[in-house]
Image (cartoon, rainbow, N blue to C red):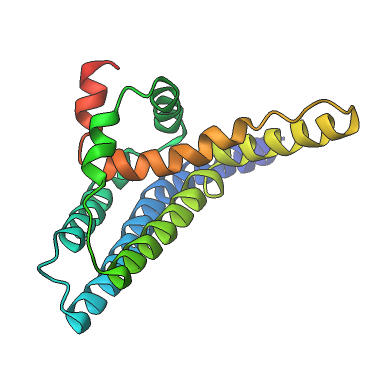
Length: 184
C-alpha cells in the first residue's frame, strides 16, 4: 500500500511540475510564432519598400506589443475582454487600429498577418489549456443539445471569437494594463 501511495504522490508532483513548465513553454511558443509572423511581414516590407509606410509601422508595433504582452492572455482575461466587447467601452482603442494605407498589397499582407495571429491566439487560448478545452467541449455539447431539442442555437462562442480579435487590439496597443488598472 505504501508503494501505491508513493507512486500516486510522485505522479501528482510530476504532473504539477510538468504543467508549470508547460505554462511557460506555451507562452514562449506563442511569442515565437508572433515573431515569425512579424519577420515574414518585415521581409515583405523590405522587398516592396513598405518600411516607411505608417500602416506597416503600426502593424509592426502591434505585433511587438502582442509578443511583449503574450503572458497576460488567459481565459479569465478573455472573459474580461468579452465583457469589454459587450459594453463597447473601448472605442478609442479601435480607432487607433485604423491606420490606413493606399497600397492594396500592403493592406492584404497586414490582413494576412492579423488572420494568422488570430488563428494562433485561438489555438493558444482554446486548444492549449484545460480551461479552454473545457469551454470548447461545453460549447459543442450545448450546440448538439440545441440541435437535438430544436432550440435556437446560442452563438455564445461568437463572443469569444470576437474577443480573440479584441485581444489582438488591446494587447497590441499595449493598453491592457491600463484597462486592468482602471477596473473597467
